Amino acid sequence: MGALSGVMFGLMMHFARSGYQALDYGLQASLFTLSRLAVPMLAGTVLDRLGYPAMFTALALGMAAVLALAQLGGGG
Image (cartoon, rainbow, N blue to C red; front, side, top):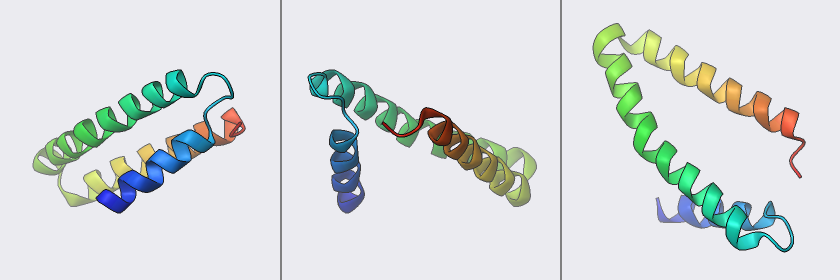
């Protein structure tokens, strides 16, 4: 988990806009932390109610949505 946090910090600083590094870092770090808290809870709820196939499908669809948004955003 420590290595992942280091990679995420590096990526957040790489994609921060010049002159807005503190603002961009704060926003990105907050979203990253929120997702680290929310995704396991949501995945567990889906797993308990609908089973493993539904959980895997929900996580795969979520990742596909993230990738689509990243492509639309242009990455910088």
